[in-house]
Each structure stands twice: as C-alpha cells, then as structure tokens.
Image (tube, rainbow, N blue to C red; front, side):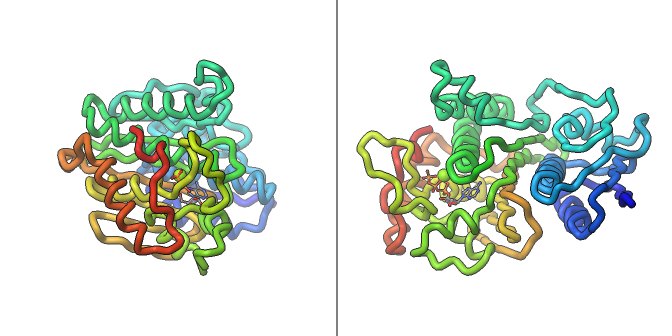
Length: 333
Ligand SMILES: Nc1ncnc2c1ncn2[C@@H]1O[C@H](COP(=O)(O)OP(=O)(O)OP(=O)(O)O)[C@@H](O)[C@H]1O
Ligand SMILES: [Mg+2]
C-alpha cells in the first residue's frame, strides 16, 4: 500500500519537520500531494529536493506526484515558477510544470549545477575550476543587483561552497536557489548536496578527534581546519590545495551581515555576529543557508576577505593541527 503525504509549508523548519516525518514511512511508494503548499522558501525547496534525491538513490523509495494538476495556490505557483518540480525526482509530474525560468535580481530559480556544466564552461573544456569561477561570478552578479562589494563577497562564498562539494564528496552536482525578500530586507541563498556530510569527510583528519555532528560543524568553520590536512601535496603552484579556510572566511563574512547556517551530519550550526550555536537536526547531505540583511551590506568592504584571512591565520596559531597559511585560492577574489 502506498502512503499519501500532504506537503505543506516549505520553510526551513516546516521542511525539516516534513523530512523527519517522511523518513519514518516504511512503505516503498509514497504519493506526494503538493496542492496545499502555502509558504515556500528557497531553503525549503532545496532541502526537500535533496532529501527526495537521497531517499530515491539510497533507500530506493519511489515518489509519485498526486493531487490536482490545476492548483491555484500561491505557494504552489511560486514553487513551480522556481522550477522546483522540474528538479524533483518524482514520477508522474504533470506535463505543464515550468522547466526554465529567467533569473532576476529578486529571484534565482532552483538550479542543479553539475560538474560537467563547469567543465563545459571552461574554455579548454578540461578544467572545471575555471568553469567554477565563471559560474560563481555570474550567479553573484544576478543575486547582488549592482552592489559591487556584495557581488565580490558572494562570488567568493559561492565558489568556496561549490568547490567543497566537488572536492570533498562523491556527489557530482549540487542544488542552489536564491531569493530577495524586499519586505524583510533580506537575500537568502540556499545550497545543498546529497554527499557524505561534514562529519564523515572531516573525520578523515584523525588529529581532530571529532565526536559527533555538532562538533564537526564547529570544527569545519575554524581557520586552517581541513579534512585533507597533511594529505595534500605541498607542490609549489598548487594554488587550489585545501588549507581549511573556505568555510571559515564564508562564515565570518556572512555572520557580519546576516546569518550563516550549515545543516549536515544530523546537526545544525548557526552563526550571527559573534554568536555561534549548534543543535541536533535531521539532515541528508550538506546544506548551507546564507541570509544577508541588505541594510548591513555597508559593513563589507573591498578588504573584507583579506582582513578575515589575516585574522584567521593569526587565530590558527592557537590550534596545533590547523594550517597556518591560507592557500592562494582562499585569498583570491
Ligand atoms: N559539502 C561538504 N560535504 C562534506 N564535507 C565538507 C563539505 N564542505 C566542507 N566539508 C568539510 O569541511 C572541511 C573544511 O572546509 P573548508 O572549505 O573550510 O576547507 P577545505 O576545503 O579543506 O580547504 P580550502 O577551503 O582552504 O580549500 C573540509 O576539509 C571537509 O572536510
Ligand atoms: Mg573548501
């Protein structure tokens, strides 16, 4: 017997609750009814899409679209316009779902970024990292809507988050969605992969003695902390080598102007200004949420990344297992 499941609010908390419920269903076949969705956010669509992908691939569950195909609900129309249904691994989707939406400065539809696309973007077709730079700059330009300093910082953040999926996990793609909420004065950018999660990957570095997911999330944003520490070659010219500075810089940058969140390894980390908190949380893969307060972006300058890197290099001296010098790439923007 299939189980029928009504999908409701796709907000951060609402989606996490529904994923928790879905993960307890024993039936192999689940009918998803989307006709009563009200609030829909980028982070909710990203978490839901990643969960379904994980559940289909790892637990061999089968999801069907059920319910009416003529839905006038605002949440449904928004999700459809954001290409949510187009990326969902759900069978029997109606033929009229939106497959392509033009991004605007208020809205970046849900997009699957495959490493193959990054290879194709590079002029040689052989260097995905060149394609990565092009792609992150392009996205940052749209999301930042003419704010040049914000654009530079967001391009750095996207590049470092994207490359982590391709460098540290077996996943060859990730999902992104972003939205500007003028009434709230915020921009929300959500990025997710269905990879192994931060605890599994960072634990390869045995020096760190990580004991659970919350601990892993606290470690991964410290300067100079990398799962790859001591394993990468120190060849001169290897500007992309991992030095453990990517998430440190991004978490410091975003928490200055808003809220930085990571959900991974059954834990959630939140950083706002200097306040850091963690909690237990259901998760599949790794999800990041960058929430920017538009009124606070004046706090960024063209020197922000340099300043954070310098601060991190000093702080890394307090930890004997941290890498003291950020790699060339972690300093370039
Ligand atoms: N998407 C992810 N999935 C699984 N593990 C991750 C992911 N992102 C980061 N990590 C883990 O967190 C660690 C810290 O990430 P961070 O980006 O700060 O440093 P790094 O990638 O090792 O080095 P650098 O960013 O300087 O190249 C990584 O080494 C990896 O172990
Ligand atoms: Mg990194």
